[in-house]
Length: 60
Image (tube, rainbow, N blue to C red; front, side, top):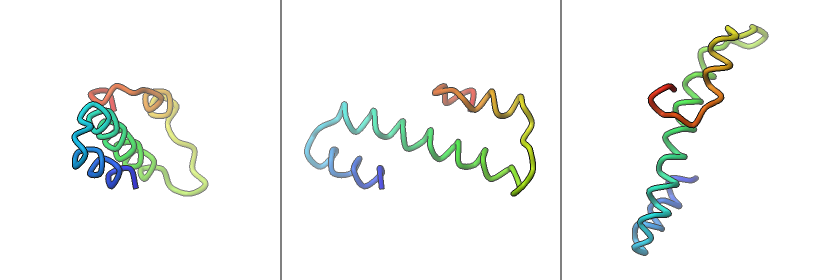
C-alpha cells in the first residue's frame, strides 16, 4: 500500500516525500521478516525483540 503511494509521489516529483516513505516501506518489510521468525504461541528472544524497536535499517 505504501509502495503505491511512493510511486504516486515520484510521478508528481515529490522526491523528498517519496524518499521518506521508501525508507518506511523498507523498515516495515524488514520488521515483517523479523516477525516471521517467531512461531505462533512462542516467545521470541528478548534480544531480538529489543533490537527490532529501532528505525536504524542497518541494525534491523
